[in-house]
Length: 177
Length: 166
Image (tube, rainbow over all chains, first blue to last red; front, side, top):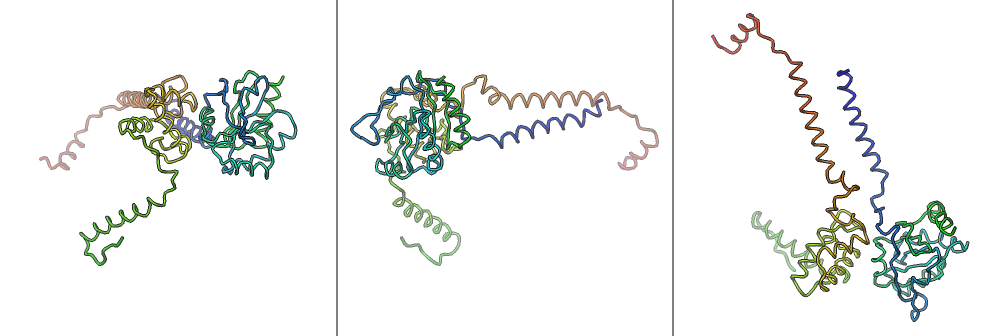
């Protein structure tokens, strides 16, 4: 028995180490768990991107399930995910609000003109204050906010067709009841 | 700037080094985009406080750097936010709380001890204890298995001759 143990113990230890290290390879260090999930979404009111004289207030979305997509024209990955939001916007499943993060108004408007504007409203977060309250540290980021104004899901980085469908749309439908 | 040429080694090398440093400093500064110039607080005491705390916080964009080290927009924004809050009279704990509320415990290089961070804090110690226990048990077992074997006369003689002990 002890003779077997001599070989078994290192083997088991080795196996555990391989499992830990191997698992580490498949974890994304950028996906930091957000402390804001299941907390009330920070309330904000900033200038509207299209009409600077108007304000967009997050209160306007109260009572609705909505999606907040943080983007910027300087952000390469936003361009990659944008067609998916254009498509989602066309389906009219859920109102999508765009938060234009630390951008130039002209660049942002040109970007939307060229690539399509799926947003029911676009908030212009020129100094990144709103982004800071939402814990944004890399655009794009996408939030699902429920009728009570609670953040139910946060996606960091560009969404894929699959993650948009299985996470965002599925959750939206569940929340809409 | 002109560098002296044809220098002899020891002194020459030193001059060359100094020259290179000056060159790199001179060429780097005007090329830096205006963005990188960190807005400094006029008050050096405040600035010291900001930087001391910034080194305790992780830059989430470049995760192996602290907010104090990083030149990313993210770090610059958060440093100026910290500066603002400290100017308003908030203490260090309040500033850290502000960050943790938004970015989570991950932003702290020294996260608080909780059920989720228990392994992080005590894992190495637990591993050390397991290793020490294994070593201890192993030594105990060995003592039991190793028997002292007295030397036979012949072996003793041979040992003495080898050791040159006559």
